[in-house]
Length: 440
Image (cartoon, rainbow, N blue to C red; front, side, top):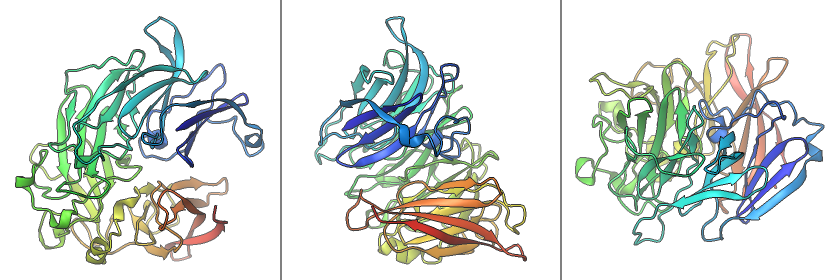
């Protein structure tokens, strides 16, 4: 993997395998350095750095290569996004701005953002009979800037001192995530919302064995850990195969690039992948569903499912491998003129973007109902695996930007699509495709 750093009174990160995989801009002046603590900025995963002022439409063309470095091999590429913390005190007593990211086989790197030098790295391994024990998860930084949290291929989330890479144990760490790390893996980025760390699980690349998608929440003050399972959701602990029946190795994995998304109102959102759905008949299986949960997943006997959305085509989606949760819910800016002012866009592998009412996901109240999206619009040039970006322009119009991946060549971009949310005189909102950039 080639990590390139671009500089022109500003910093930019470019990480690639054989193709460019992701770009993050971390811009600062000498007087202000802005942490980037999780994938897409963490929290609601907006992907927008509101403090950015140096990288503009006029200046971006003048970026120039500052350094590049070979960090790993084709067999162990970087398939995750970096996080950033400035002015870290190192073991030597010096300070440096650091980038942190995972390699596919599980090495956590800390890189000097100014020079590209490796400050420290460490690896946790697991006996792997399938040669497929990998992670695409991005780490997350503690709000204090003292610790970095990372999914490890042994099925744990671990805590490290940012300046030295030394593991910090106790108070809930390392976090136990799975009994079968070979087959139940962490491919989604970690997130920190308030003082709670979130991580999710899914199956391996080929769904080779039993697994169940889950969300694990860790209170960073108390170390208390809570669990919500997408299948057998009435069971609030890390499951083993004997605990929960999974149909055709479709475990409703939570594997999208955004994973857990902050709702901003003491709730979180997750979208699940292929799996059995029976909540419409009183069951506890939430395959191919958008689920709104109480933040922190409190295990106090109360129901933590606030609301759900499941397409009417859920059975067809499962049978055709059309995961609703191939992408994460994208929270839109509020639109006061709409009858549904608070909305989410959910992309999926069934070639549809769905506009959904956050205040009543199915339009039928909680929970387990099917259908009820505000609007649905089809696209045809590939799958959506990345997290869509929502933006409100200076005139108040809300835009949604979506990158599709070539369905015949996973990992290759197919197109860039710009949608506008339109609201008519009756307050009905719809998505309207405004332009598509040429396939690249």
